[in-house]
Length: 426
Image (cartoon, rainbow, N blue to C red; front, top):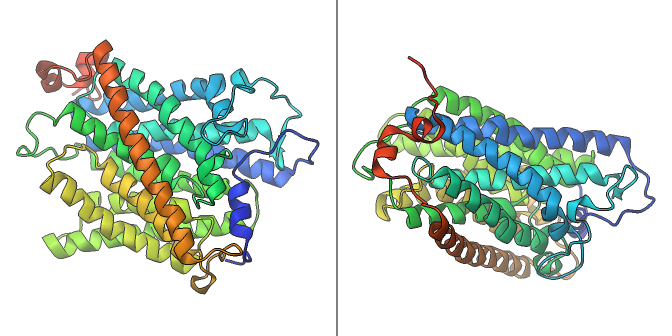
C-alpha cells in the first residue's frame, strides 16, 4: 500500500460525512459510490438471503428469505426517518441529533466530500440493511416473525445507530483513533453478539444438539456465497468513498483474504475429517471477508492474506467451541464467523497497518501497542454494549409478543405456518 504515515487517520475521517458545502462533486467518485451502493445491496438481496436460505431445512427456506427482505425494507425507512440523522449529524460523543430527521435539508445540491450527500446516505443505508439481516442466522427456524421485525427495528435504532456514530459519525471511538474501515465493530461484532444473545434467550431448536440438521440445499448457499464475495468489493472498496488507489487496495486485500480464509477453513476440515467440504469452503470465505473488513483500508496484500488465513482457522475452531462445547444453537454460526472474525480483524488492523508489513503506517505519535489498546477498547465496548442492549430488548419484545414459535409450528416449518407458502411444491 502506498499511503504514507498519517493517512490512515485521514482514511477514517473520510468515513464521516462533511457538512453540505460548495465542494466540487467528482464524477468518478460519484459513479464508483453509486456502483458500490448497488454491490452492498446485492449482499443482502439476494446474497445473504440465498446463503442463509440454503443452510436451513427446506421447510424454513421462505422464512429466511422473508426475514431478510423485510429487514431490508424496514431499515431503509428507519434510516430515512431518524437513523441517518442520529448516526451522522451533530458532534455528540455518544449519539448524533435530529437535524436531518426525515432527511431534512438533503437536496440535489447537498455534498458530502466529493460525492452528493444522497449517494453517501444510500451507501450507508445498505450497511444498516445487512447488519440485522446477518443476525437472523442466530435464531433461524424458531423466532416468531412479528418478534423478529420488532426486535430488528428496535435493535437497529438502539444498537447499530449509536455504535455507527461512535465509530464513523464523530463519536468517542472515532475520536480515539479506532481503526474500523468498513465495519468490524459496527457491523460484524454487533451482528455476531446479538445473534448469540438471541440464541441463548430463545433456546435451542427442537432436537439440538443430538439431531442432525444439515443444510437442505448447498447449491443455493454457494450461489449466495458468490454474491456475497462479489458484493463485498463494494462494502470494503466503497468505504474509501473515492475512486482511487485506496479503494483499489481495499478490494485487492479483500479478495486475497476471502481466498485465504476459504482455503484455511477447508484445509482444517480436510485434515480433521478426511474430506474437504463445500460448506466449509464457503463458510471460510465469509470468515475471511468478515476478518478483513475493519482492516481493509489500512493493510497491504501480505496483511490481507495473513488476516484471511487467521480468520479461517480461528473462526473454524470458534464454531466448534460454541456448538460443540457450549451447546449454544447459533443456528448458522453468526457469532463465531462474524463476531469472532470482526473482533479478530479489528485487533489485527493495529498490527498489519505497520509499514513494515506493507500497510499504511501509523499516525505520528502512535505505536503498535497504543493502537492495539485503542482497538481492544473498541472491541470490548462494542461487545458489552451490544450484549446488554440486545438482551434487554429481547426481554421487552417478549413481553409484547411471543419471541418463539410453539413446538407444532416449529415442527411444521415457518414457511407454511407463518407465511402460508412453501419454498418447494413437489
